[in-house]
Image 1 (cartoon, rainbow over the protein chains, first blue to last red):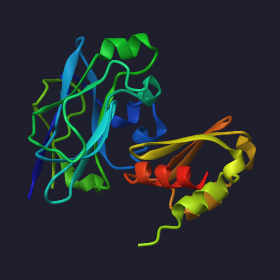
Image 2 (tube, each protein chain N blue to C red; image 1 turned 90 degrees about the vertical axis):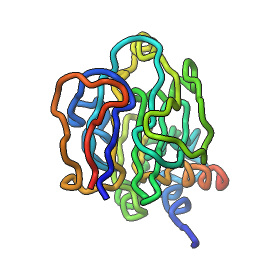
Image 3 (cartoon, rainbow over the protein chains, first blue to last red; image 1 turned 120 degrees about the horizontal axis):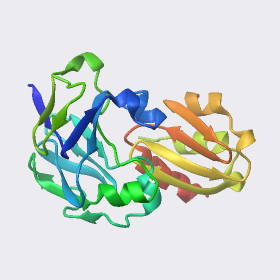
Length: 150
Length: 78
């Protein structure tokens, strides 16, 4: 069952290897791709249909019924912002649809605070070969297909 | 299922007395330590860590998606 993973944010596609964090850059928790968000305050969307299994102000994991977990991290080291500027629209354990707004946040404020606002989208514990259609650059809209996970 | 990772990770971080603060962040444990030099990276990896990153007294231990649970368990041990 191929899973279509949508981009949680609009912006410029950025290879995971360029994310300024060794965990993501090294694909330690799984392969994927990142998006450098454009614009100010916005909603981050769920990449897939599923259940919110982990939820922080700055990051979340949505797991599908088939057990595929997609991690979305809003910026790097943004845990240090202690949720400031992040507004949650869902609770942990909630069922969500692909494209549903989960968290509103402001990438510009993240940048102003001295952090990278880049958004890694990770297929947790996937084999790199399981992902296809990964863009290596260019612009993407929020809710547009980012990659396919077989 | 008994999970001995929290005990092993805490021991490898130098024990409860060496931990100032620990928090889980989706895939990793962020640990602020009194003394970063005593961290046993080999023991962390044998306890299931995918990776260890040290920046002075701050150590990040990559443990995968159960980091939040493990961090909570370690906090219970402190």
